Length: 286
Length: 330
Image (cartoon, rainbow over all chains, first blue to last red; front, side, top):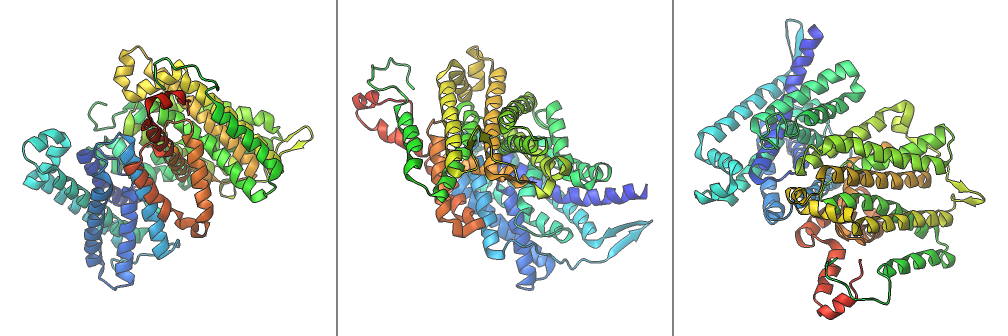
């Protein structure tokens, strides 16, 4: 029983990180209808920027987290301007393929700059909290708390501010948003900025509990795509539910099926859910 | 492909292909460079896989991102059957193709409940499951160590272990593929697929059974992937899970885009160009994608029809009389 609760906490921490990455992806999809295959590489670059700021420049952890978020937000905006904006009218698979090119490019660049070796990202948040026989590392606690805070802030922004409402409006109806005078191009840039920043925050939070490597982006990419397809592409609550569902499936799948197949379990859940509900859990009818 | 009646020609439509085939068949008599054979064989194997992707993406407009997974299933089926059960390659190869087609059908039954982007991501997920299963199923696939020592096939006294003879095997396989794909494209089935690419609802209202057509093209696509995979297994002689992963799928996609999606020459042309280009930037090794990544983006941005598309565009600028006279199905 204790083990189950222990795994529950781990799944919550993992789900928090997944949700942040998935939220950025689903926002971009909602607003631009672009499945941004380069999203995972933004996450990976975010981890490397944080790592470089911490080790090469000696920046304190939380400042490094913030700086990485801004840097990745800007990088995502640049991508939108250079690659996705010019492709806005082209047939379905083109933006997706271009994004795959960006994914490869960023991964190769990171390998060129920082080498293919695994890096260890040391977080200052150390120590283990023990309560009623359950133990939780400080970093995992930080992951849970920070991701919940960021999600609440994002909800406040989307639901309660005018700028946030423009994002929602554009996701609902692009032409309608343009008609009522919403600057569609600027909102698109802003959405990409948010998605890049969220990916970097997730990376800075999650990387200390695992390792930093150029291939971490690809794996995360597949997972967050599984998540947003699971939740219904473009749906914000869907992304969060999907993220926790995947985290739970992986952690508990790892317990019951064996750690070897933990990664497969997540995708198996995806395939099963889609076989039953092709539009995803929260998607509008396909 | 215009529906207007084409004027009588002195040469059959496929003559440029025959010319290429004859040239390719003659070259090994004069050239004895094993390095060149190796490059050529790899080009042909991956071109077959690219043709398999082309029938889905180019004709039906569906992006199948589990493609390398089926390439891997074909390769591992041949590898396991010949290595562990001692089967002849000539039995294992057809079985691998049938298995890939059957699994493609199974995947299609579920995957075609989704559309467009979701379909692509769904198949990507399936691709990951295939790779991970191959990587973790140690007892069957050798897991991380892979399968080692798959023997080159023999046919009577002909030993395909030599690069020069394997070259002909790959050439025949490629020629069969091109012939098959060309026939499919010209058939009613191919035309129906193009209609589906243009718009599913429209195709359905024209009386095309979209679902069965998609299933059939999926089977063709995965069968071709398995066809290429089986050849790859016996050529390389070693199999690792990495070759079955999404990055192989994306590389095949790159070949297809460079050559021209939906064209007959595109898959071969693109594979040839990128593979040769890769020989020149071999020094970059893992950093090849610093060059190839932006190339993919630039292609999508500025030459979405690839090289074959560029050729069509150039030809379209010539006077109509000339164009009609040379309107071969390239």
